[in-house]
Image (cartoon, rainbow, N blue to C red; front, side, top):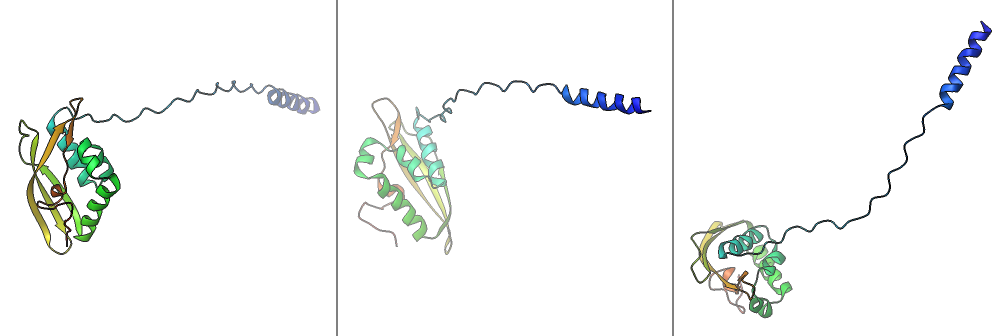
Length: 161
């Protein structure tokens, strides 16, 4: 009987000592730069308008600014552009914004649209307007922005109350 215990202990020691070696660790991966998201390059007026309207609805004022023409950017700094949209949105109690293209772009790059704002105190308020677009030197359509695109008739010196 003692020899059975000795045999069992020997087998356990043999198994314990013969645990296979873990496989070698894989070589560290060489870090690679993450691919950047594709940038929309508007080749048609409607593409530029859609990008501008989508960014506006999402409150992405910096993305909207990136779609402006060089002349519009020269006339209005990025921080002023974003602040104007933000202050008006907050000041009128806007809780929802929908911007829709209402017709095809003209040959000169004018895109008709409707803005519908849902206001906390007054409900839905809509107006129609036209988004002016121009092509830059590379043929990309850009927004020839002016304050009247926020509200028809709004100027650089006027305020919304």
